[in-house]
Amino acid sequence: MEFKHKSVLLHETIEGLRIKPDGVYVDGTMGGGGHAYEICRRLSTAGRYIGIDQDEAAIEAAGERLKEFGSRVRTVRSNYENIREILEELNVKEVDGILLDLGVSSYQIDTAERGFSYMEDAPLDMRMDQRAPLSAREILNTYKEEELYRIIRDYGEDTFAKKIAKHIVNYRQKKEIETTKELAEIIESAIPAKVRRKGGHPAKKTFQAIRIECNRELDVLDSSVGVMIDLLKPGGRLAVITFHSLEDRIVKTRFKTEEHPCICPPDFPVCVCGRESRGSVVTRKPIVPSEEEIRENSRAKSAKLRIFERT
Image (cartoon, rainbow, N blue to C red):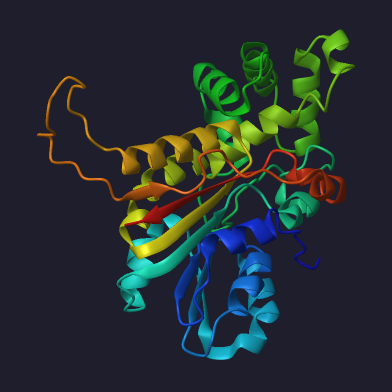
């Protein structure tokens, strides 16, 4: 299956990064190379693009799409949490811009055997990096009920998290949960019929929660924002597109702390903590997709773009 993914907030992101023709840019979640292509075509032969993705299919697809830009492009199969080490290996000390487009790609959702979708029956997987040891199947069959409840409540923000966790544990006492269809049916059985008739698919939030846990998405983001700001040149920018309220909260909080890091009591006449601002938040409010973009790509609906500039 061809790696297809419609890049969200494409023009707003490229504009926000303020591409310099001879700059160095890192894409921490390269995907199929949509944002990457727009960055690369703005670079001169002196510019560099470094694309990171943990998905082998994304690396292959982006490599093909960006072939015309030759030596300007370097792709690395890894998690963006390793950005410092990756840049050290490439002898890059600092960069002009970094981009993160978080969440799951259309390709990953639409490729049934990857196990991301509750709409198709497939083995439970949900790993963005198929070399990783922890899959959705292992989480669902080995985590304690309290752990499952916490994940579904916090990452899925599902009102019925407690009931869903209980139903999962009761089911697996009879047999191991092996497929996406089994999981979707377990979730449906835990939710009252009148609630199931309203809104979206009842399994959506739990699938999202398990995926986030499986790929450590929030932990990786939380520990990486400061590192990425550290790697920016003065005037360099970090642009992050989120699709989940918890992701957005992490980015918003981290950006705010980097801009105003002082922890002195407000009544102190001068700062004594010694923490200095490392830049400023460019987007006081997140940039969101236009109605036209949402009409063309429904998956853009929850997207938010925030940008930070290093001083």
